[in-house]
Length: 190
Image (cartoon, rainbow, N blue to C red; front, side):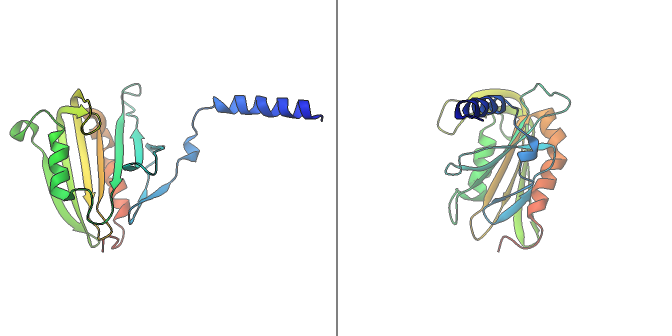
């Protein structure tokens, strides 16, 4: 095969694969955030993030009941020892992203110790969520829900927040809990 034909075939192969859809097979089955290893539920797809950014991992859940809808985002943050603002500050920030307050929002906050790790779970069934980066422009998203978990660790807390349309968050709830539980096998928070 001459060089010209070889490079033509190589170029054609690159063009054909460049437009290929992202393969779910490439999604990692497990991933690490801080001192915790998480097992990704099959219903959640992997979303690439900038490893130098604030987000350490991100997953997406496409609600089977509304596959063309916005779906649910699950984001993971880990800032290191003594960083990230702590449990109460993050709960306040997460709840502050909703327009409603107090009884109208009706948040559920629960704390437990699992396998030596203190875990705080936060849930909002339905409200108007302000989507966007902190300090930047936001977009009010009506009828949104949120489920979060904060895993405390001597190496720095891990913050996990799932947001999306309320019905989709509810549909993803069991898989979110399985995701959080997968990191709590044993005492990783010490």
